[in-house]
Length: 115
Image (tube, rainbow, N blue to C red):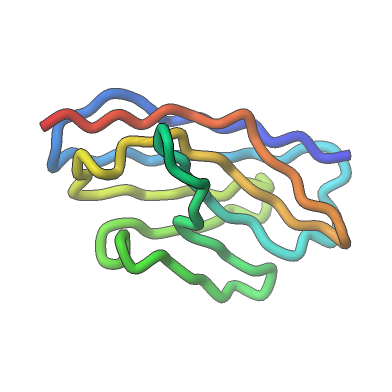
């Protein structure tokens, strides 16, 4: 079993930056990928950014150039650096981990951007 704990969300003004962190614990060997998804009220959960165990990354078109995913393998932690935040980025952000045939989710952290 894997446990994911997210941190770093908050309330900021448009143009500000936030850095989200997600730490994995438990059975963390053989992780395939980790990433970030977000879900705004009334909308479906969408991929924000994802990083494979090999280090390749992908970012949603809506966040390219503003958000960057990174990792600290020694701490089993993945980060999401969010710059130039916009009101449309307001959502609950969820950490995601893939391992074997299983997918794990964090509890989510709220990001609210005021304009």
